[in-house]
Image (cartoon, rainbow, N blue to C red; front, side):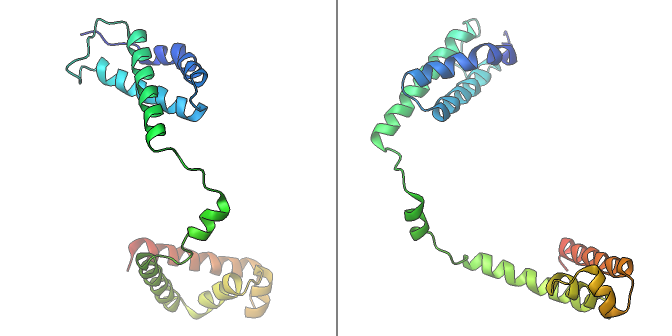
Length: 172
């Protein structure tokens, strides 16, 4: 059973096949998808996974035939169920801005974990984190508020992040 050099074949043929499909009326994106699908079929045939693939055929001919057939199938599907172009304004009206119930539950659980992790922090570390991340104070302002140097305030905020991250990754 002979194996085809698919990498070389791709470099030699993909652009030409794609260009030919575009000339036949496919969009560049659709042509690219068809070429990829054709190469997947060729890969399957070259490994002998399809019982009807003849390994002594020219791979270029097989590839061209598969690409043409896939393009015809794509055109047929487009005629049967054409893609409707929906303006972004209409999509915005149809989209539900509310999160799903699953998302709400997940968010609540994550918030509960974060709040529990914050409660476990030493008072000064928690306060530094809250001032910096929740109230938007700079590290210098946090340091002044807590009577610490800017670098120590930064170290406390970093420590809080590390503990929150550990808590989130452990989930407990």
